[in-house]
Length: 136
Image (tube, rainbow, N blue to C red; front, side, top):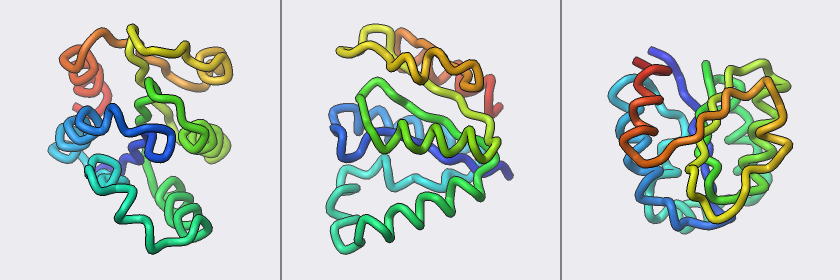
């Protein structure tokens, strides 16, 4: 079964947390999601007993194990940007999802990098339809 590293904002903002949970539940029916904690409402408190270095080492190990990376980037996050760059350096296939009516524009460092498969979506249904094409 494929291993997916799902990346989305944690410290950058949790306003899309419920969407992340739905994406993860969708993906878990088709693959192993290494980062399923991102969908938890309590994600910030679950990491409060970890140092930043421990989080980095854990997440880097998961990225190295992953078969592909799926990121939802409508909420700006420095960490997700770093994860995408690292995934590219590791040669992982990367699919980036960005909501068309998001408050902020997608970074040119993401949209301009032809390595990433950027998918602009209108609503949750269209996002899930695109995910179905990727993970089956």
